[in-house]
Image (tube, rainbow, N blue to C red; front, side, top):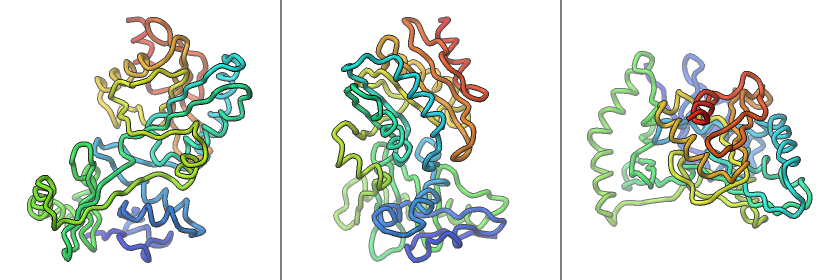
Length: 319
């Protein structure tokens, strides 16, 4: 049994996304900019599907949906509003924003707070990718430019995600083809790319939603940068938000402790850390708002069953 992928624009439709057993097909992320710049009535849903099964170099998924955290965000904004003085500067860091659509919604809610100087930074570690190919061959490799690691391989009729690939039990042909080309043609292509072979064709792919790109041009208060949640931040903020990313299926216990340390150090005294997760747009968010103290965090508000980071944040507080 094998499953093909979607790598051509005219093949990307809502009805074409599912393969055998109802499992969604992998879609080439190279199609994202073309869909984002078009006027397809299903544009937003198609963009969501391109990303929903795309795994980044560290194994995290870029799943995202519009209006995913509306009710949760409204409560967070209400808490923040009561803590700001008129005329004060409010610096926000929204981490791991995927294609930025939920960051735009959060920004728009924050912009409703009157008499505050808003500075909003949205970040993600994998929003910019490089595509390398060697015409006229059909093979194209999508690379994380920071690490040089391949994250997706397009070899018609297949599309492979390197980190989160297909089950060998359900799709043995896919795994055989992937393992073979990783050892052969992909390895050769990456070596040629490393020495900057001029015969290679390269292209840049930016996985930012149309709403995010438009806001970056229209509002100087909104910025986007590359940033990994496991790195120290270069600035300090009144509020840091991390949604649907800090969980044990993505990160080790040590990495989660490091992320908590980085967040604490990036917050101003009394700053807020907002974190949580949910399944789909409109579903309950299990999360919380924490206040930075001198030695750690204290809980201000809990949503649903609370944050998966709760034990780590509170143990850091006691330390």
